Length: 379
Image (cartoon, rainbow, N blue to C red; front, top):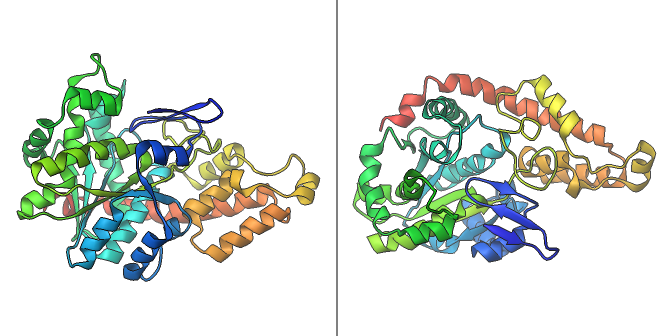
Protein backbone atom coordinates (compact mmCIF):
# COMPACT_ATOMS: atom_id res chain seq x y z
CA UNK A 1 0.00 0.00 0.00
CA UNK A 2 1.42 3.38 -1.06
CA UNK A 3 0.39 6.09 1.41
CA UNK A 4 0.93 9.82 0.88
CA UNK A 5 1.76 11.95 3.90
CA UNK A 6 0.83 15.58 4.38
CA UNK A 7 4.16 16.80 3.00
CA UNK A 8 3.59 14.91 -0.25
CA UNK A 9 6.12 12.18 0.52
CA UNK A 10 5.11 8.56 0.10
CA UNK A 11 5.87 5.46 2.11
CA UNK A 12 5.05 1.91 1.12
CA UNK A 13 4.03 -0.90 3.48
CA UNK A 14 3.19 -4.37 2.16
CA UNK A 15 3.80 -7.87 3.56
CA UNK A 16 6.94 -8.06 1.37
CA UNK A 17 8.46 -4.59 1.45
CA UNK A 18 8.59 -1.43 3.52
CA UNK A 19 9.95 1.79 1.99
CA UNK A 20 10.01 5.37 3.15
CA UNK A 21 9.52 6.92 6.56
CA UNK A 22 6.48 5.22 8.06
CA UNK A 23 3.77 7.44 9.52
CA UNK A 24 2.14 5.07 12.01
CA UNK A 25 -0.79 7.35 12.79
CA UNK A 26 -1.68 7.46 9.11
CA UNK A 27 -1.12 3.72 8.84
CA UNK A 28 -3.64 3.16 11.65
CA UNK A 29 -6.25 5.17 9.76
CA UNK A 30 -5.57 3.68 6.34
CA UNK A 31 -5.28 0.05 7.50
CA UNK A 32 -8.30 0.46 9.78
CA UNK A 33 -6.68 -0.94 12.92
CA UNK A 34 -7.43 0.50 16.36
CA UNK A 35 -4.89 2.19 18.58
CA UNK A 36 -4.24 0.44 21.89
CA UNK A 37 -5.61 2.64 24.67
CA UNK A 38 -5.32 2.74 28.45
CA UNK A 39 -8.54 0.77 28.92
CA UNK A 40 -7.16 -2.17 26.95
CA UNK A 41 -3.85 -1.99 28.80
CA UNK A 42 -5.68 -2.12 32.13
CA UNK A 43 -7.72 -5.07 30.90
CA UNK A 44 -4.55 -6.97 29.96
CA UNK A 45 -2.88 -6.06 33.25
CA UNK A 46 -5.84 -7.45 35.19
CA UNK A 47 -4.82 -10.91 33.97
CA UNK A 48 -1.04 -10.55 33.61
CA UNK A 49 -0.46 -8.50 36.83
CA UNK A 50 2.16 -6.46 34.94
CA UNK A 51 2.50 -5.05 31.46
CA UNK A 52 5.27 -6.07 29.14
CA UNK A 53 7.56 -3.12 28.45
CA UNK A 54 6.62 -3.31 24.75
CA UNK A 55 3.05 -2.54 25.77
CA UNK A 56 4.03 0.16 28.26
CA UNK A 57 6.12 1.94 25.61
CA UNK A 58 3.76 1.58 22.68
CA UNK A 59 5.94 -0.82 20.70
CA UNK A 60 2.78 -2.89 20.34
CA UNK A 61 0.51 -0.05 19.41
CA UNK A 62 -2.54 -1.27 17.48
CA UNK A 63 -5.02 -4.12 17.37
CA UNK A 64 -8.10 -5.71 15.88
CA UNK A 65 -10.73 -7.14 18.26
CA UNK A 66 -8.37 -7.34 21.24
CA UNK A 67 -11.23 -6.30 23.51
CA UNK A 68 -13.34 -9.15 22.16
CA UNK A 69 -10.70 -11.84 22.71
CA UNK A 70 -10.08 -10.58 26.26
CA UNK A 71 -13.81 -10.61 26.94
CA UNK A 72 -14.00 -14.21 25.73
CA UNK A 73 -11.06 -15.08 27.98
CA UNK A 74 -12.85 -13.55 30.96
CA UNK A 75 -15.83 -15.77 30.18
CA UNK A 76 -13.56 -18.82 30.43
CA UNK A 77 -12.92 -19.27 26.70
CA UNK A 78 -9.15 -19.49 26.30
CA UNK A 79 -7.56 -18.24 23.11
CA UNK A 80 -4.63 -19.65 21.17
CA UNK A 81 -1.76 -17.65 19.68
CA UNK A 82 -0.63 -17.68 16.07
CA UNK A 83 2.47 -16.03 14.62
CA UNK A 84 5.16 -17.06 12.18
CA UNK A 85 8.25 -16.58 10.07
CA UNK A 86 8.65 -16.91 6.29
CA UNK A 87 12.26 -18.06 5.82
CA UNK A 88 14.12 -15.91 3.31
CA UNK A 89 17.36 -15.18 5.12
CA UNK A 90 19.02 -15.24 8.54
CA UNK A 91 17.11 -13.98 11.57
CA UNK A 92 17.82 -10.43 12.75
CA UNK A 93 16.83 -8.50 15.86
CA UNK A 94 13.71 -7.08 14.24
CA UNK A 95 12.32 -10.58 13.73
CA UNK A 96 12.82 -11.38 17.42
CA UNK A 97 10.76 -8.47 18.73
CA UNK A 98 7.23 -9.88 18.10
CA UNK A 99 8.35 -13.40 19.04
CA UNK A 100 9.67 -12.27 22.42
CA UNK A 101 6.33 -10.60 23.08
CA UNK A 102 4.46 -13.70 21.90
CA UNK A 103 6.37 -15.81 24.41
CA UNK A 104 5.31 -13.40 27.16
CA UNK A 105 1.69 -13.82 26.08
CA UNK A 106 2.09 -17.61 26.05
CA UNK A 107 3.47 -17.56 29.59
CA UNK A 108 1.00 -15.06 31.03
CA UNK A 109 -2.15 -16.56 29.49
CA UNK A 110 -0.96 -20.18 29.47
CA UNK A 111 -1.82 -20.16 25.78
CA UNK A 112 -1.15 -22.69 23.07
CA UNK A 113 0.96 -21.26 20.22
CA UNK A 114 0.79 -22.24 16.57
CA UNK A 115 3.92 -20.99 14.86
CA UNK A 116 3.78 -21.12 11.07
CA UNK A 117 6.83 -21.42 8.84
CA UNK A 118 5.47 -20.77 5.33
CA UNK A 119 8.54 -22.11 3.58
CA UNK A 120 7.01 -21.51 0.16
CA UNK A 121 6.08 -17.83 0.60
CA UNK A 122 9.36 -16.05 -0.12
CA UNK A 123 10.20 -18.60 -2.84
CA UNK A 124 7.01 -17.48 -4.59
CA UNK A 125 7.47 -13.76 -4.02
CA UNK A 126 11.22 -13.18 -3.97
CA UNK A 127 13.22 -13.18 -7.18
CA UNK A 128 16.40 -15.24 -7.08
CA UNK A 129 15.52 -17.30 -4.01
CA UNK A 130 15.57 -21.00 -4.75
CA UNK A 131 13.39 -23.42 -2.83
CA UNK A 132 16.53 -25.25 -1.68
CA UNK A 133 17.99 -22.05 -0.21
CA UNK A 134 14.69 -21.27 1.48
CA UNK A 135 14.85 -24.69 3.13
CA UNK A 136 18.34 -23.92 4.47
CA UNK A 137 17.01 -20.71 6.00
CA UNK A 138 14.02 -22.63 7.37
CA UNK A 139 16.22 -25.08 9.26
CA UNK A 140 18.26 -22.24 10.75
CA UNK A 141 15.28 -19.99 11.55
CA UNK A 142 13.56 -22.80 13.45
CA UNK A 143 16.51 -22.92 15.84
CA UNK A 144 16.28 -19.18 16.50
CA UNK A 145 12.62 -19.54 17.46
CA UNK A 146 13.22 -22.49 19.77
CA UNK A 147 16.11 -20.61 21.42
CA UNK A 148 13.67 -17.99 22.72
CA UNK A 149 12.26 -20.55 25.15
CA UNK A 150 8.78 -21.39 23.91
CA UNK A 151 7.16 -24.24 25.80
CA UNK A 152 7.35 -27.36 23.57
CA UNK A 153 4.28 -28.80 25.32
CA UNK A 154 2.20 -25.80 24.24
CA UNK A 155 3.89 -24.87 20.94
CA UNK A 156 3.13 -26.37 17.53
CA UNK A 157 5.29 -25.63 14.51
CA UNK A 158 3.50 -25.69 11.17
CA UNK A 159 5.78 -25.95 8.14
CA UNK A 160 3.60 -25.47 5.07
CA UNK A 161 5.23 -28.10 2.86
CA UNK A 162 5.74 -30.57 5.72
CA UNK A 163 2.21 -30.23 7.09
CA UNK A 164 0.39 -29.82 3.80
CA UNK A 165 -1.71 -32.88 4.66
CA UNK A 166 -3.24 -30.84 7.52
CA UNK A 167 -3.36 -27.48 5.81
CA UNK A 168 -4.16 -27.86 2.13
CA UNK A 169 -7.78 -28.99 2.43
CA UNK A 170 -8.56 -26.07 4.75
CA UNK A 171 -6.63 -23.68 2.49
CA UNK A 172 -8.80 -24.76 -0.44
CA UNK A 173 -11.92 -23.86 1.57
CA UNK A 174 -10.46 -20.41 2.14
CA UNK A 175 -9.36 -20.06 -1.48
CA UNK A 176 -12.86 -20.75 -2.76
CA UNK A 177 -14.06 -17.63 -0.92
CA UNK A 178 -11.29 -15.34 -2.23
CA UNK A 179 -11.60 -13.79 -5.68
CA UNK A 180 -8.76 -12.49 -7.82
CA UNK A 181 -10.14 -8.97 -7.46
CA UNK A 182 -9.87 -9.27 -3.65
CA UNK A 183 -6.24 -10.35 -3.94
CA UNK A 184 -5.48 -7.55 -6.39
CA UNK A 185 -7.01 -4.87 -4.16
CA UNK A 186 -5.31 -6.23 -1.01
CA UNK A 187 -1.84 -6.87 -2.40
CA UNK A 188 -1.56 -5.03 -5.71
CA UNK A 189 -1.14 -8.20 -7.76
CA UNK A 190 -1.78 -8.28 -11.50
CA UNK A 191 -1.91 -10.62 -14.49
CA UNK A 192 1.87 -11.06 -14.33
CA UNK A 193 1.75 -12.37 -10.74
CA UNK A 194 2.46 -16.10 -10.50
CA UNK A 195 -0.50 -18.22 -9.45
CA UNK A 196 1.33 -19.50 -6.37
CA UNK A 197 1.54 -15.98 -4.95
CA UNK A 198 -2.14 -15.41 -5.71
CA UNK A 199 -3.06 -18.56 -3.75
CA UNK A 200 -0.62 -17.97 -0.89
CA UNK A 201 -2.89 -16.02 1.52
CA UNK A 202 -5.14 -19.07 1.66
CA UNK A 203 -2.31 -20.97 3.36
CA UNK A 204 -1.48 -18.13 5.75
CA UNK A 205 -5.11 -18.05 6.87
CA UNK A 206 -5.19 -21.71 7.92
CA UNK A 207 -3.43 -21.53 11.33
CA UNK A 208 -6.00 -18.92 12.43
CA UNK A 209 -8.68 -21.63 12.51
CA UNK A 210 -6.89 -25.00 12.25
CA UNK A 211 -7.07 -25.64 16.03
CA UNK A 212 -10.84 -25.09 15.77
CA UNK A 213 -10.99 -27.67 12.98
CA UNK A 214 -8.91 -30.23 14.87
CA UNK A 215 -10.85 -29.81 18.13
CA UNK A 216 -14.26 -29.52 16.45
CA UNK A 217 -15.18 -26.32 18.27
CA UNK A 218 -14.67 -22.61 17.72
CA UNK A 219 -11.59 -21.31 19.56
CA UNK A 220 -10.59 -17.61 19.64
CA UNK A 221 -7.27 -16.75 17.99
CA UNK A 222 -4.89 -13.87 18.76
CA UNK A 223 -2.17 -13.02 16.22
CA UNK A 224 0.82 -10.89 17.36
CA UNK A 225 2.62 -9.52 14.30
CA UNK A 226 4.35 -6.54 12.73
CA UNK A 227 1.95 -4.11 11.08
CA UNK A 228 3.10 -4.96 7.52
CA UNK A 229 1.45 -8.39 7.73
CA UNK A 230 -1.99 -6.92 8.41
CA UNK A 231 -3.29 -7.22 4.79
CA UNK A 232 -3.14 -11.04 5.00
CA UNK A 233 -5.16 -11.07 8.19
CA UNK A 234 -7.68 -8.46 7.03
CA UNK A 235 -8.54 -10.84 4.23
CA UNK A 236 -8.57 -13.77 6.66
CA UNK A 237 -11.01 -11.91 8.92
CA UNK A 238 -13.33 -11.36 5.96
CA UNK A 239 -13.33 -15.03 4.98
CA UNK A 240 -13.43 -17.07 8.20
CA UNK A 241 -16.97 -16.10 9.30
CA UNK A 242 -18.16 -17.38 5.90
CA UNK A 243 -16.66 -20.75 6.88
CA UNK A 244 -18.25 -20.66 10.33
CA UNK A 245 -15.20 -19.62 12.36
CA UNK A 246 -14.33 -16.65 14.55
CA UNK A 247 -12.51 -13.71 13.07
CA UNK A 248 -8.95 -13.81 14.45
CA UNK A 249 -8.00 -10.95 16.76
CA UNK A 250 -4.59 -9.36 16.27
CA UNK A 251 -2.09 -7.06 17.94
CA UNK A 252 0.45 -5.14 15.85
CA UNK A 253 3.92 -3.81 16.61
CA UNK A 254 6.16 -1.13 15.18
CA UNK A 255 9.13 -1.99 12.99
CA UNK A 256 12.55 -2.17 14.60
CA UNK A 257 14.33 0.42 12.46
CA UNK A 258 17.51 -0.25 10.50
CA UNK A 259 20.81 0.91 11.96
CA UNK A 260 21.01 3.62 9.33
CA UNK A 261 17.97 5.52 10.58
CA UNK A 262 14.28 5.64 11.51
CA UNK A 263 12.89 5.57 7.97
CA UNK A 264 12.00 1.94 7.38
CA UNK A 265 12.56 -1.46 8.99
CA UNK A 266 15.55 -3.69 9.58
CA UNK A 267 16.38 -6.05 6.71
CA UNK A 268 18.77 -9.01 6.78
CA UNK A 269 19.51 -8.46 3.08
CA UNK A 270 21.28 -5.20 3.93
CA UNK A 271 24.27 -5.95 6.15
CA UNK A 272 24.70 -2.32 7.12
CA UNK A 273 21.13 -2.10 8.41
CA UNK A 274 20.79 -5.24 10.51
CA UNK A 275 22.19 -7.04 13.54
CA UNK A 276 21.88 -10.77 12.90
CA UNK A 277 21.45 -13.33 15.67
CA UNK A 278 24.57 -15.02 14.30
CA UNK A 279 26.76 -11.91 14.58
CA UNK A 280 29.91 -12.13 16.68
CA UNK A 281 30.69 -9.59 19.42
CA UNK A 282 33.19 -7.90 17.10
CA UNK A 283 30.62 -7.71 14.29
CA UNK A 284 28.03 -6.20 16.61
CA UNK A 285 30.51 -3.62 17.88
CA UNK A 286 31.67 -2.69 14.37
CA UNK A 287 28.11 -2.34 13.03
CA UNK A 288 26.89 -0.21 15.93
CA UNK A 289 29.91 2.07 15.91
CA UNK A 290 29.94 2.51 12.13
CA UNK A 291 26.29 2.46 11.12
CA UNK A 292 24.03 3.27 14.09
CA UNK A 293 22.45 6.65 13.35
CA UNK A 294 23.23 9.18 16.06
CA UNK A 295 21.00 11.74 17.70
CA UNK A 296 24.06 13.50 19.08
CA UNK A 297 25.74 16.75 18.09
CA UNK A 298 28.64 17.21 15.69
CA UNK A 299 31.20 17.86 18.41
CA UNK A 300 31.61 16.88 22.04
CA UNK A 301 31.44 20.53 23.07
CA UNK A 302 28.14 21.05 21.25
CA UNK A 303 26.75 17.83 22.67
CA UNK A 304 27.69 18.79 26.22
CA UNK A 305 26.05 22.19 25.72
CA UNK A 306 22.89 21.28 23.79
CA UNK A 307 22.45 17.57 24.49
CA UNK A 308 21.38 14.78 22.15
CA UNK A 309 18.01 13.83 20.69
CA UNK A 310 17.10 10.35 22.01
CA UNK A 311 14.06 10.07 19.73
CA UNK A 312 16.33 10.18 16.66
CA UNK A 313 19.10 8.02 18.07
CA UNK A 314 19.08 4.38 16.96
CA UNK A 315 21.03 3.14 19.97
CA UNK A 316 18.44 4.66 22.30
CA UNK A 317 15.56 3.32 20.20
CA UNK A 318 16.96 -0.23 20.34
CA UNK A 319 17.26 0.02 24.12
CA UNK A 320 13.69 1.32 24.34
CA UNK A 321 12.14 -1.23 21.99
CA UNK A 322 14.09 -4.37 22.88
CA UNK A 323 17.08 -4.27 25.21
CA UNK A 324 16.31 -2.25 28.35
CA UNK A 325 13.14 -3.48 30.06
CA UNK A 326 13.75 -1.41 33.21
CA UNK A 327 11.84 1.88 32.84
CA UNK A 328 13.92 3.71 35.46
CA UNK A 329 17.21 2.75 33.81
CA UNK A 330 15.88 3.72 30.40
CA UNK A 331 14.67 7.09 31.71
CA UNK A 332 18.08 7.80 33.23
CA UNK A 333 19.76 7.02 29.89
CA UNK A 334 17.24 9.27 28.13
CA UNK A 335 17.75 12.19 30.51
CA UNK A 336 21.54 11.92 30.56
CA UNK A 337 21.71 11.79 26.77
CA UNK A 338 19.27 14.68 26.33
CA UNK A 339 21.20 16.82 28.82
CA UNK A 340 24.55 16.11 27.18
CA UNK A 341 25.93 14.23 30.16
CA UNK A 342 25.96 10.99 28.13
CA UNK A 343 27.86 11.04 24.84
CA UNK A 344 26.85 9.17 21.69
CA UNK A 345 29.92 6.94 21.95
CA UNK A 346 28.96 6.06 25.53
CA UNK A 347 25.36 5.34 24.54
CA UNK A 348 26.58 3.04 21.78
CA UNK A 349 28.77 1.18 24.28
CA UNK A 350 25.73 0.56 26.50
CA UNK A 351 23.83 -0.92 23.55
CA UNK A 352 26.79 -3.00 22.35
CA UNK A 353 27.12 -4.59 25.78
CA UNK A 354 23.37 -5.30 26.00
CA UNK A 355 23.19 -6.87 22.54
CA UNK A 356 26.30 -8.99 23.03
CA UNK A 357 25.09 -10.28 26.39
CA UNK A 358 21.80 -11.25 24.79
CA UNK A 359 23.38 -12.87 21.72
CA UNK A 360 25.89 -14.82 23.79
CA UNK A 361 23.03 -16.59 25.56
CA UNK A 362 20.86 -16.81 22.47
CA UNK A 363 23.60 -18.49 20.45
CA UNK A 364 24.19 -21.05 23.22
CA UNK A 365 20.47 -21.83 23.33
CA UNK A 366 20.35 -22.02 19.53
CA UNK A 367 23.04 -24.72 19.56
CA UNK A 368 21.08 -26.68 22.19
CA UNK A 369 17.89 -26.21 20.17
CA UNK A 370 19.12 -28.68 17.54
CA UNK A 371 18.17 -31.51 19.91
CA UNK A 372 14.66 -30.09 20.46
CA UNK A 373 13.40 -29.65 16.90
CA UNK A 374 11.46 -32.91 16.81
CA UNK A 375 9.49 -31.89 19.91
CA UNK A 376 8.04 -28.92 18.04
CA UNK A 377 7.49 -30.64 14.69
CA UNK A 378 6.02 -33.96 15.84
CA UNK A 379 2.69 -33.65 17.62
